[in-house]
Image (cartoon, rainbow, N blue to C red; front, side, top):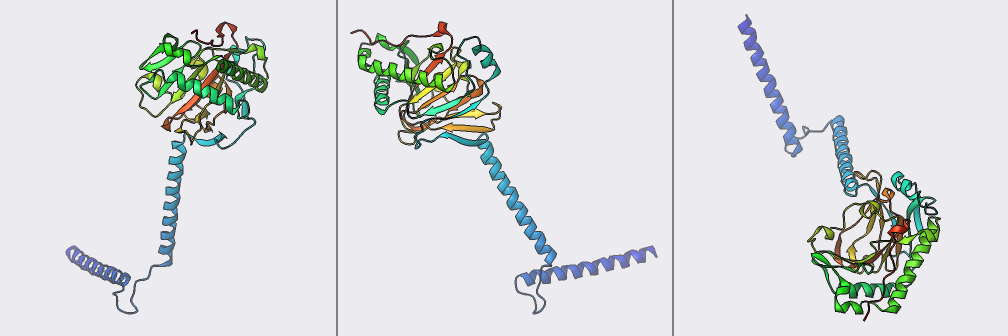
Length: 332
């Protein structure tokens, strides 16, 4: 009896299988328009809704992935402090100082900022002053220059990039042609303008600020780095890199998007491991950026991808023991 039931069950399953295969075949043919008239396959409404839901879900997922990739690739969102095409009297951002920076600077009377921050102005330096300083940089660096993408010229110490090392530019006979007394006057005037601006913006005493080492011209290109000095694009804090720095300024001598591509100054807000916001500054000839040098202003410079970016870093300290004198005209 059990055997008979098993055979009947098997026959029943075979018949059901045949029916399903026939139904599937007819439905499939109906989709192709080959089923007998009146017997075409029609998707139930519930299946249509499921299909729409799946398509919409996939779209949302794909969109989410695109947004995520964009967001993480930018190390967070990006906002602009200054575009190259803008001409700014002054624009800035203020925020609390890094505790370690504040603790150190409080030991220098008259040098504690009301608030830390970063600021930019296109009205401090004239076009003629920028031209004079650019010519000094070009003439000086042309006497040497790095084999890699970053060359510097420090008129105070005489340091000049030369191949994969540094030399003293004043040891070269041609150094006497780098700048003259009139050029040096422009250099001093520009330094004084920036010093006054920093004192006013951060509400500190002008006399508490002192020029410090290194203050230097820089030339950045897209050449591959040859030494660690050519790798200018790393994230850093100025106070860590240069112990004497308390206030940093950069005067740009060429234009982003015209003379070079890349090379923007980028401040990274939030945790250094995973910044939540990138604040970008596009160089403009004659533009000055000024900021406190502590860990509240973590930053980097983008790699230059095309052309040549010239600038001068003018740095200030509150520690008079770290002060340096203005450069002097080379003796003939």
